[in-house]
Image (cartoon, rainbow, N blue to C red; front, top):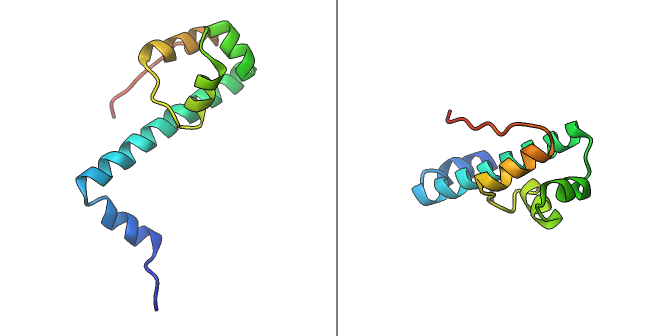
Length: 92
């Protein structure tokens, strides 16, 4: 029995508007998490140091970096300030 390629299954799944929205939300969360992890690494800060300096719980930082949280703008601003960075957003 032939199996369907992942790309084909994915293309079919995103035709469903609800599934497309879920995928979009997950990708957005993962992108923010990767950007935070990269900014933190560029700043030479550990999660512990960032948590202390920002006042944001280490578990919250961990969840954001792993794409398991949807942080508020206020939280992201605290994190950016603690790293000596500026939060920037874009609609593309």
